[in-house]
Length: 435
Image 1 (cartoon, rainbow, N blue to C red):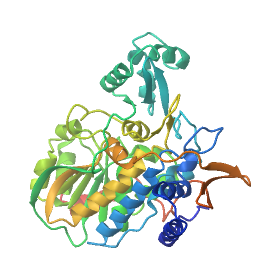
Image 2 (cartoon, rainbow, N blue to C red):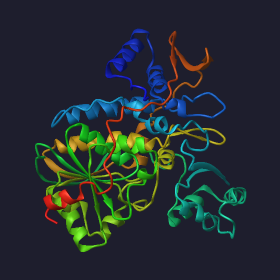
Image 3 (cartoon, one colour):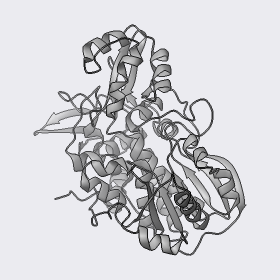
Image 4 (cartoon, one colour):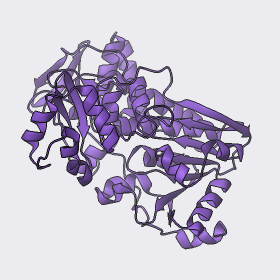
């Protein structure tokens, strides 16, 4: 059985309680953080859950409010408990906090000569690249020897070599805190979305699929595109989590290496109101698709990458845990610890959904990006008090203004049903879009 999420009325009561009891802004943030389910995923496995950085719960709540407002402009207002979204994968996977190793287990803080680097080894080929990273003929599974080599390298060198090898690695606070989590790259043409917006979801894993699913809840028609032989990697993970993010989407598989497949993709993009895409720029370059040209043709484009589409890091890869570290979402210490579960992913998915909903209600097309690291930097907020956690009656709780807020376990929204299989709607979509 899945735990029910906190309802909007419950959140309103929590806010009212905070005001009535004279809570400070910090205390309000801590209360939301403790109730989110994400705080329970933050900290040492043999210690208390960690308060830092509680301000992200307020950021997630604000993003959820934006989503509700923006979707109501053209469809059904989508109301979600923003902070609770941060722990959904853990709730469905049985993950728990692991301190300096990520909740999912693939990312870890490694000691360097001048600090620490978050190194994400999410794929088998990442592990195989470790000897090249440390420039030594070592067994890639011999972690003590690999760690010893990393310990005499500078953090900058570890990150630089990782980027060259296609590994995901970050140091704390690579990205300065921006005013906005989104960045408009170019403005398109005067335009108005369809009565029922058509969204092409070309993303995978967590952030992009979450954004697409929230738009579908608002009433958009969402078509999920997967490359032939390259399905969404989340299909190999816990089925309930994939179902949560992809139920209700139409599914099509396209061979991007064939002329017919590329023509079909162009047809889908041309007739869409919005494309959500999560590949590095070189992928679209290979397909001869320019987002700015797409926007000038009448389709808006939302890019969700780890580090953005422009500049030095345009083709740098990243995942939720290391991108969060780049944005400064980290528990300081020796060694540092991760915040929640790949927290930049659900934060970005929530933010991107609100941005996408705003784009669908705009009077012009545009190319906009919401990079994971940028969203993390925006969301981290100021530091808060850390001396409020206590253990009583068998539970961790935050003691705030004469009230105790129990640290809630991660939870998930109810799953409406199973997601469709790969290419389940391919035949009908090929007929509809003329390929």
